[in-house]
Image (tube, rainbow, N blue to C red; front, side):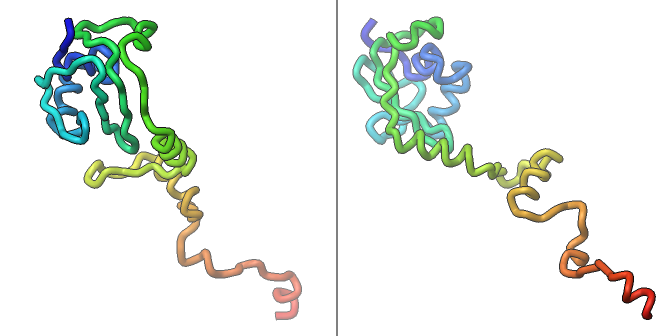
Length: 147
């Protein structure tokens, strides 16, 4: 077999968990070959380089075998070669260590854990009201007795 459907290969090579997720990624324009977005039914062959955009980075894979049946994880090095640029992994690491969790617009309120992480990141504590943060309430005992 020299060729395989793109969505089947992405699923068989364990890049996506299900074939429907692979097909959806193709339809959304997250999968490209040579800079051109591909349909799920596109036939791929050995030697093609596939770019898969999974924010925040874009992975690149070279096809070593065109398969349509899922294989074990130990056999993946025989199926594909990861040719992702090192800058992409640096971008992923920078995103991971920044500590900021980006929320997509419209995904609702942050969870308690996310809110606390945001408070730690911005330096504001949710416990103290904002209007008390500028005042110094430490009174000396002398001020009270002399009063």
